View 1: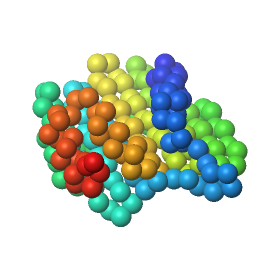
View 2 (view 1 turned 30 degrees about the vertical axis):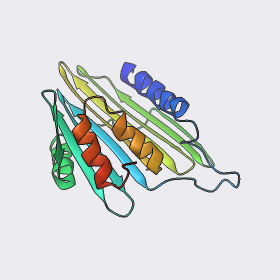
View 3 (view 1 turned 90 degrees about the horizontal axis):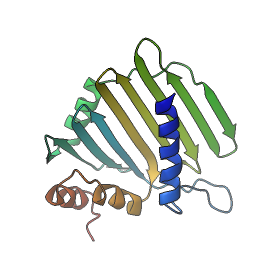
Length: 176
């Protein structure tokens, strides 16, 4: 349950820190952008993936304090090798036109797993976290982000080196 509450707070903090990045236009139509932002953490490693709607992707891995560019296919492969044991059924589901929130939590048998999905205005955030003893894994995926949010996601990733950030921005044509 602690993971669920922390993740839910992270979703609302993300919304508060990114004014205008989560919402719908005045007609109620989706106001989503074409970027997907992902960060996956497993033990001491982090994998960052940024994808555009046209299929262009860039990825990086941080391990032992060093960051390197990865092929996006390699990054997706590393993420898939460490699947999360997501809870099967949501504990809370809230739906309204243009809005959905789902929270699932399983803290049985010495494990604490949580999954939160939040969608509004064509944008969505998925937070999937698992903890068993001293093993921790988490995935955060944001879809429907615009170019400014994608640029900010890369620039604010504190564990990526400046050179890796520059390479990622350049790969997506986001270098200003």
